[in-house]
Length: 535
Image (tube, rainbow, N blue to C red; front, top):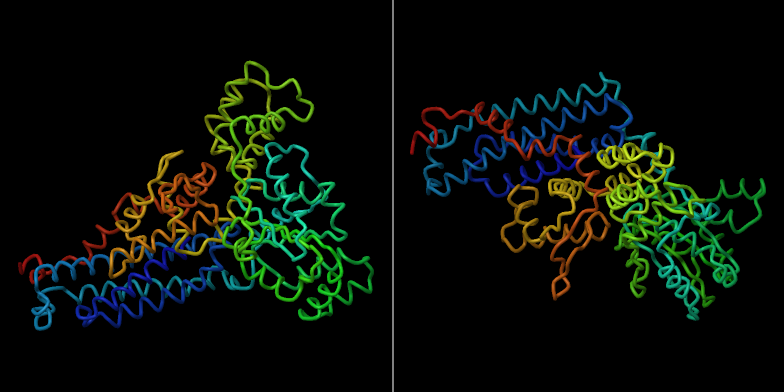
């Protein structure tokens, strides 16, 4: 998360260089140099942020950069506020002739120089700490998260609740008589059950009878085109050493041509599970998937609505909502008491059990994690009360399940969206958040880059809300009559993720206190010929 912090400071310094050029005079060069240093640091941090969890040295190093970025923000804010004060008092013309009497540029310049030396020291310490190869691909933690998401249609979950209606709808759409290739999409937040639903549809008896060729591939957030092509080709052909050797030697274009040839005369169904990027679809649809009037279909699952619409703008994505109260309870019973629990929940545990199921807010993954945890505990009311009272802690402990899978959604967010998402953790649990108020808060806090016109600023902020909803990080609560998002909410599991990430990044402390700013102000204390004294 240091990346969005630095991105924000870079934007602020850019604003300063563009809007306050008249006032910069003696510190313009220092501000430009500071901005360039931060840009270089940000490039490196894109890799470092992904590896914080696996190495304490990287975590400490990123924390040092983050602290320096916040100090840079404070210095820039203080300088900008002084400039605004001068403009409001009509002292712009005086500044041209008496700059040192209006703003003490020398002290501000020294403060920036000191900060630059600190940033350079942090950069130099990278090798001393043994942090030398962050840019050489995904770390072990990132690879572990990706392994968790690899799916297969073979192991179908038998504990499925609440998917009957949407399953029928999906099967019906796949079996339509249209001979053109069509894309059918399932979208929803992480842990909603998209892969489980896709497996159910893929293995449906009518689907198996209709398509003479079925393929399943998990795409994942780190897309490897050649590996995806090889995976599909292997499912279409008998596996021999000759085939494996040939696929390993083939170039990308050769693999595309081979897959196209394998699928050309078939009525095929390809499931692309967990597609994150539009580019992944473009790579496959470009030359690999024939559209030759064979009634073929592609079933795509994604957390991002934009990906589904991009794949087929004429096909409305099937949105997988969270479970209702009764379906949540039925799934909870299956997981907490095992498959043979037809008798249901003991009377003394039902009230507390329903409260626990309710805390999962209809997210199947959360219900399965908590239910599975209770399956291994004693069936005592006191034990279940401990889980209810410490629900967030128990849910986040299961990093191999809920925490890790939701963390993938956060990791895929661009830097500016991460910053805005973390801010949502400040709202109380189960809050319905007014989008208008949220936008005003983002702008007031300086989280949104300021624009020349207020309507442009609010438009940009509204687009952020739309993008978070599109990625299923935020849920739409209410729409206006003209189909704009009026209010939204954050699922409890994602809110807990936001709080945990924010605490790791000292985000809330920065927004709740301004100790660092006060300290910075004291360091840039005005001399007797300062603004305050002069006026």
